[in-house]
Length: 463
Image 1 (cartoon, rainbow, N blue to C red):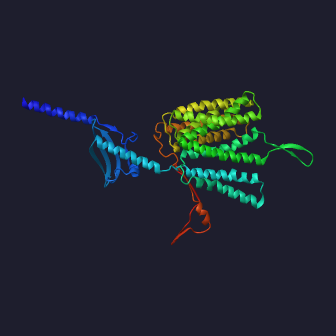
Image 2 (image 1 turned 120 degrees about the horizontal axis):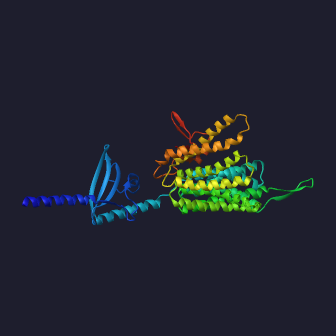
Image 3 (image 1 turned 135 degrees about the horizontal axis):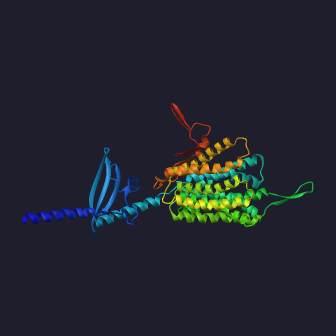
């Protein structure tokens, strides 16, 4: 009887222990409850587990109301090791406070400049194509003075942002949204010019009078609105922590809405130039609001935004190509079907990326798939048509080819999207070295027996 009681007590103890460990629950490792585990990347920043060589990961588990267990995984001599230590509630509270403090210190001293290089090369290109010519035209300079002003203003489009962003945060989302602001601002400058009807009257020597474009006013508006919108877009995206995917989505929808609103007015019978140009400006900002709304419904990576773009562009192209095949000459029908197709495409595109996080590379592949399908189908169609007059059947064939190419690439990635895109701009690397200009025609470093040169610009993209 005593042996039986002893056996029952022993089994009860074992079962109780098994039950206890079966109830282990992973708990956060910081005060705010945001850190579920610490990996090697985070540990390199906060240095909490600095006594473990080859540190891999650490997790915290709660055993009872007052006892915890810390599991630490690390590698020694290519062998996987695990260390488990029990902790009291007081020890866990102290540990969590230390993790939170170090994370806060790290965040306060780290500036996100992942998008700085992209911003600088984008503004440099804008300076070469818009700000430089704009300065020359606005000043009326010519000959060597014009060349000098062009070079200086173009250089300023790089040097001024370079200095201003030296110790300032420039995220991927802020960079992309700012560059779009610079580009759309050029268009808006032209829209404002037409909206206010700034053409000037010209009297030629023969007594004829006509209206001509005021080049100084036009380029002045384009330059000013481009600079203003680039800065405002940067501030909004940076202050509200836009991701690259969110910025891409807002750019996407603003492009569509800029064309959609004046198209709808024209279909409705409005032909007043000022009304159409004014509606295009309003459409851009309405598109921003639409993109913000859509991107808030789910997480959008850059790959998701590319997928979304492909779908709505194809949605607009397919019905237009069918009208072309029918040899329709009704321009309002073209506009109406393009708007309707783009709208339906946005709905389908948002559905296709639901629950996905496509990588940038996957988004590029889907875009290339669309182009490839369009060119293959178009090439075959042109070969088949030969010298006949059946050219009108080629547009729908090209559209269907693009749809097929996109569908094939989408299906290839749909079941295996990238779960979380941690670095949305890591595939594109653009590096500037302005100091290289000072030694462009001389050797920078000499190491016998080889000579080395410093490049001014290098661009790489990893698919």
